[in-house]
Image (cartoon, rainbow, N blue to C red; front, side, top):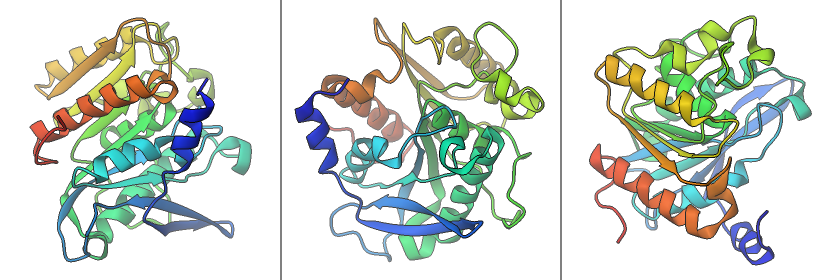
Length: 271
């Protein structure tokens, strides 16, 4: 549970702009966009598109505002996405991934007006949102009929905080019951190939939703396809630990920045 002080500090973080990326049944869904100080649309910057957690059933884009602000302060465009969830929209995990693909396509299609390099767009997320981010890279099966399929939704890197990346029937999976009819296409772990982008996963050793065993299997699959993969396991930590404690927020942000620096998305890591 967040302390009152920590909660109030997070509440003060605000996006620099909002943009709608799709409308479904008369309801608008928007992008919460953070930009570096002095950013101009004529700039060409790397970007990251984040998807919040909530088991595909709830959650809020605000939960990843601290990560967005952190990366914007280091020169990236950082975006937190509002997408359909079961509790508000009566949707399934399938529609969540459809919205993730829509958001990635919108950002790439509108990169000129946002000042984004269309060849340097990462996807990231927390928990189920991290599954969605990974799915934009590993599957092409879940597309909104209103999307332009010629616009590539695949990210150029993945930043995954305690991702539920195994959605199969095994003991280390999460959410299989909800996706049983289509898990083979849905589960990122089961769809890694030679095109999967560089990936970092940050997870607690005691996480029972994003199990470290599943993250290690993801590592084995990435290595089998000769793909870049960084796995950081934080001893004694549980699901969402980086959202509950400013110390872990800071050290995971620093780890994220080092990874992004290593692949050319930001110029330097914080001290």
